[in-house]
Image: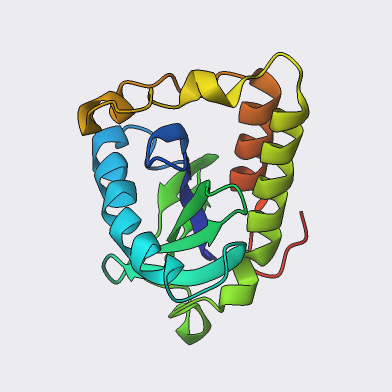
Length: 180
């Protein structure tokens, strides 16, 4: 039986520059589509930022369709963590994962915001560990002051192997109710 699974994790810098994007099966070839979806959530972050405290689980940001939903978390440093969940999930068929055609049952019609808190906390911990790395400089991944909006998309993404492995582990192991 299939259940909700993470389809995409995005880490977006405080100037809305993408720091890291991970895609999970069966969406690994949908980079452009998920970049667009992540970008569409940034306006919602801005609206909610004005209404909530800085370090906040913002919950459901955007129900993209009946299958995909975007959830967000904002850190005290202004970095945005986004998780796009495939509510239908995947099921194993002959040893390979395939996208399920329908929700597993009525309990999967949506997630509670608390279902994703362990994933967001684990992502925030991974990002904090990245910041504690003496060889990582967050300034290398941010646009120069006064740069145009196009310069934000030209910033280098995070390439730290431990951080990338942590994000992959979180995305692959999360299920509703799991502790990470």
